[in-house]
Image 1 (tube, rainbow, N blue to C red):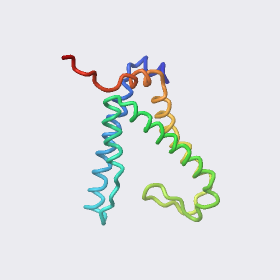
Image 2: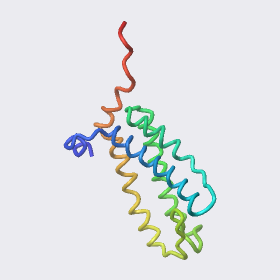
Image 3: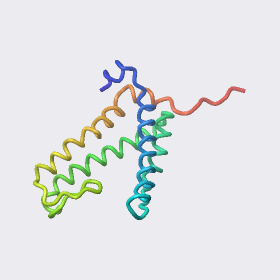
Image 4: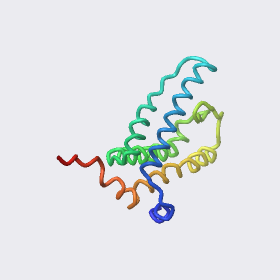
Length: 146
């Protein structure tokens, strides 16, 4: 991943910052449009976390990078735990977002998780790369000289 990031001269912090801020805007629009067209207002405060992570990543804050890595690893652990627990607790339906699949075979559940895990892998690999560590090493603005 480090070779790819260096070859294409990708600023990891700014890239993830923009992606998180766009995801925040999407969540806000999703809440508003769901309320207007489909029914009751559902509050999702994930946009607040995305805002702070997005601004922190854009500014190359190492705490934001570490928190994003923590959340990505937590997602991987929860996904793998869900795959293991799925045959025992899923029952007759499997819910993805607002879509319910009635009595899914186990291979469909595994296929969903396998196709979703690369999102976590790209996040973990990018933020753990040497290029990202170098970008996030010098955080904060230097003090003004008087």
